[in-house]
Image 1 (cartoon, helix red, strand yellow):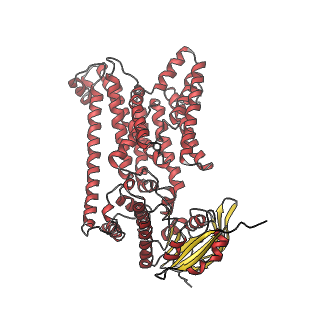
Image 2 (image 1 turned 90 degrees about the vertical axis):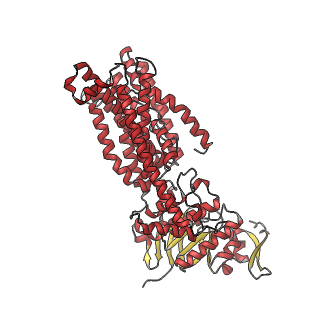
Image 3 (image 1 turned 45 degrees about the vertical axis):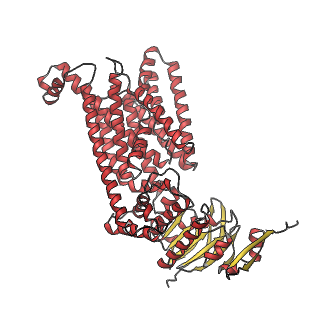
Length: 263
Length: 354
């Protein structure tokens, strides 16, 4: 049986002898949809993404479109999964175009005209063709994030893992990046998992949500079902409510911290 | 703002990129010519004051000139000039790869203790006569220097992998190696007799006067054998510049890449230092110039750094022969004097970001 989507069974991950995530069970995350990964700092969000990409240690089963990634050699897994870290190192003297060709060629293959056309088309799709010959260093944070997205997409992943892609971006770029991620996720039928900190962004752009606390899955499902006053209180320790604004979109309003528990 | 790219942008960008690639090839050609010119200059200038015609005859028909001229041309000038080129290329290539795998623009065989370790190896051989038993006399000091340089380079790698410190931690460790081995060399100087002291001090200056056809052959062979491997890794090394996580996520076995690259660096820098002594800053300066001229596509960056290293050391060699009339100043002194202002400009440019 080849089940579509990403399913985790008894998945554990973490640093050395200190597991951050233990026996995680995740029902199939749907292809073509954005899954937002939520939780406070240190709850294991990055650990989960890194372990899924094979950058960190993990045990258990990770079924991606019917294949157990954990049983595949690393190179084969890298063909299907791309992890995009938060930021680029500073001082890299490469053109945008070069950096994407590098991503395309890093694991081999010939530099054909077709491959070059693919790079250009992707730049065009992401609206960064005019940056092609600029140096990475000269870009703004938002532009860098789009270039990172291009580096990831050129590898045609089935599973795209974005680690806090919005953390350094201004409001305009936050929406711009998420809109592009949504469009490409649907167009490529990828499973996209995004770590976001802003609950409202999660509510607005996510199709599916996972909420973690101390390495355990607290809630999963549609974002409106996951982001509710109970989970805001138990996971983040804040008092919040979800209200529909005058245009009908749900918004999270935080009223303050939960009163400190006694004992 | 981000979506207003014109439909013309596509072919334009690729054409622009092709132009950049062609320009880089052109610059590689220019560098080759400059090296050739510098070699000629290096070959023709020298304290013996031979005319161009005599030199040419001695090159074409060694039997047609007198023995003295023949020796000057074939045993001194030629190996000296070629050694400058090959040592410069080896240090330039090693420095470029080192800066990439350690992700630090201050990494070089000289700043990370490889040269100091070689000096200590040489000091043991010169002062105490400790070395690898059964090795021929002319290789005795070089072999010792090589073993210690290799040891230092491998230790850098070991420390980075076992302790998993960041790359700046590795650089700090390298600096610790510099101080340790320099102290040990001073200790050797302290206990040395007058004769051996002179030999040791002269060795630590780094001089091309130690060039010989044998050494030239060994180093050239190593360079020619290792360069293809460097070029084969060039895409992976370029990807590593985008950050280790990104590179791993692109399916690159970064640990293996680091290890094999470090092995190449170790052999090249250890051989270069073992044969001519510590020559500072070539391994630091050449990659920087290469980066400014060619960017960091390692298909160009690595060979360019080797060529620039060759050119810089060759020019330094010409300068070292002509700066004081009738005397050949050890070339290590010249490169260090040029290197210091360069080093400072690098630090100033990065403004603490190094």
